[in-house]
Image 1 (cartoon, helix red, strand yellow):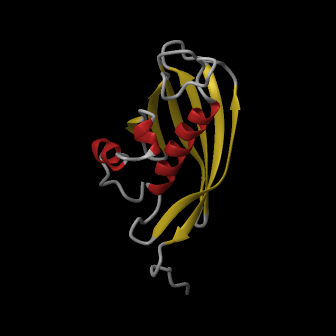
Image 2 (tube, one colour):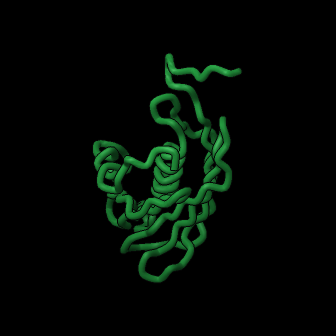
Image 3 (cartoon, helix red, strand yellow):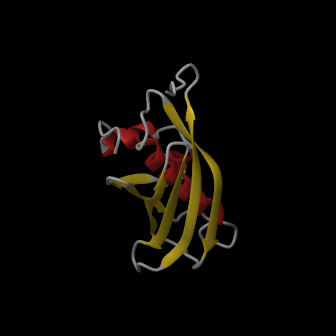
Length: 147
């Protein structure tokens, strides 16, 4: 990681007062080019039929991909924003927790691509597979000089 001063506790604290916090998303592990988190399957993340809402799975995927991408750049000069996300919902879940594991497939100067596999914590069944493309942008007034 380009910037490793972010402990798991600090990253979870950074997520307070966000959609992720509202959905109960908790980051559980951070690796060199990976990040893992879990989300409860409960009234906050259900659709009307009592199953995990596909949008909640996508929110978990985007949260993990976005934070993972952010950790790969010089945060004093760059930000990462979502360009495109897709998700295939493969299995319904009624309760418990789902675990998302995001892995960088490509970390470039202007784009990053992350794959997020979401599984049911108890059974290990694959619930959703997602891919997000992130744009790496300059922070206002922090544009890098090119030679």
